[in-house]
Length: 557
Picture 1: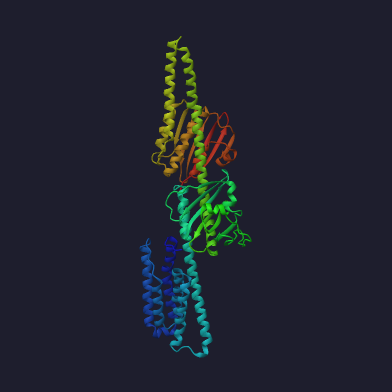
Picture 2: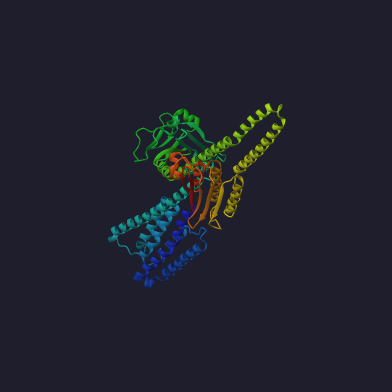
């Protein structure tokens, strides 16, 4: 896995800042060596030049922070070899040697770094032999020095390799999490996520299965690598859970071959113990989904496993390290996936609530009026031969009723259209709707806006206006209130909307939060969902027969 994102650039910056420190340490070690004072003029000059060069790289990094400015390991390796040839002090050369080992581990990986470290160790330790400073009587110490130097170099290369892998993995996990965006939609987010997973693990496809408890269904998104079209999930009955999700949700499983007895391995994700019996996907389901090999891990909502992610038909045999890495990915994605499915569920509930409201409004309003008109027309049809003048008067009254209902229907259709609200327009839109409210009913309305400039995102402003409009419409149709007070205020941390009326109130008494209302299955569904979508807190106070107060608080920033 390779990454050139911000985490990797952070590692490269660390090397850039560490280079002058290493040069300074080597310079101090050289000063401490007495022979260097007499024979080390060239080594001093080289080290000073290397130090100035390293400081120049730091300055360039600061000046061009958005660009990748890093030296290849070959440059530092060449500097080490030149200094090793010039320096009268072997100790001073250890510092650039260890830096080269760490940088090689970070840029090249562990295996090439071990060979590089071995070669540098031989060059570093053999120098006294070439210069005639090593006596055969000290050969044991020489061997020990070589082994210690090699171990130190390999250790630094290992740290560099671990740092590289850590930054690459972090970058990959961040990129995967960023694909799960509510604005992008569930289907498109999962298509991108599954494509990225298939590419990273060299698989021909990927799949995600999610168990929807309330609907008692399993939704299955199946993507072949490189798919660009929107994917539509398979909708399966909950009875197929064991076949799709396997009979052990805590099992992390790999089947490199599913034919016959198959070839696979796996363990319990809770304790890492190997499974005595590997769960399988039934043969008919394998044929239906068309795969030959798979690797699968579960993801959670809270503490409960609710779904699985699959990699299908690897282009190479999956290994145990692949399954461990896949587990870490699933743990990292559990939170973003839970949020995405939760918001999808909330949107579905909001749509259901909105449809119920529209259905109720049509039934209680226009449909009832049409039924009344039909009855009156039937009565007039019978009266017409004997009392034409009375029938004409009643027809005029019916005509006015039709006009009124047409206006009401037109307003309802207008309210259903998508609304674009910006922070600069919110207060004017609220005042305009308040004026319309006063004209359409006898209920008094006081609109108090305690700020001249709303500082909130367009999305927050849109939801605030929709909540405000729906609350007033509910009061007009159901509350039988004579007066309403609406307050909108904002401070540095939050924006608050309060709608207070003196009508009949809700069917319950007391003060409840949105979550409490959900548990009791009470309160305005659409307003609750709209408040949650912007991270707000809803509070409803009701006193039956004496009115209700609705408060929405939304944190800013």
